[in-house]
Length: 371
Image (cartoon, rainbow, N blue to C red):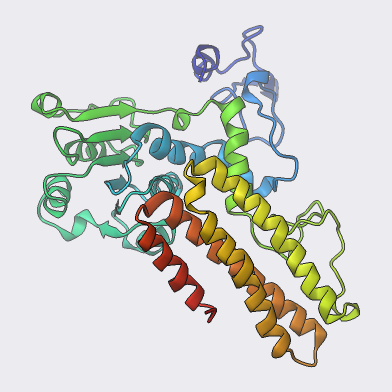
């Protein structure tokens, strides 16, 4: 974040004239961290406004402007866990869950959630947490518990509670020599962080972070696009703006009446979606995986065999109800899309050995009984 806006967050007034734009009953009300977005209407510096994809659902992407981006950036921009590393996250609320997601995307093999409320563990598991630690369940300090679990300490830790004791624990639980601790939570103004100087001499690294180390105007639109491309897949539902969600967007606010379509037309419709998706899919592979040539055979195999086999199976076993048959095809088409996206995570992030990649393809296809 630039110096101009970083300083302005504590002023409570506009940069241009040093005055507030808000009042109630004649009494001045000051701006909150430069944006005052808890109000229905606000006035802010142009540098605080980012232009995003107009098709993004505002009731969803609004949370990307603070908590989600802060947690996601803490993982991928600051902690930067190497593939196969171990990460501990202190605090499993909104920001902490975003940190978990970032660690999963980065390829961490063990993601350990630390929280005093066990009820949060199950939700964190959905985001990628592999293990959980509740400090209440142990007599030893939690940093010692984590050190025992990970043969000396975790590779990365991220603290999201703002509790100074949790901050100290997050720093002291990382492995000496290479461990990195990132502090995200905002502590009480009178809190003091105390640790032994030897923790620094042993080459542990402590970092602070603001807004996930993102540049709001340039990076926030990219975070929105990440959400649009990877998470917004509730098709065949349409968006509030009347557009189909990716990857089956058709630019129409009206759903197709399946009863008026013949079987071949329905198959062609699904096939068109497939071709459109595969094109977008290959583009994404090209962006995220320089070794695109290593994936060509797998993609061609899936393209030529997978979708055709699924469609032929459904045609041969079609019911007398065109509508249910159409929905059945759509269901399997989206299962196929899900399959492809699971494969890309394995093939481009986690799997290097060609034989293992082939095994992933075979095992995934067996889930759909495709030989």
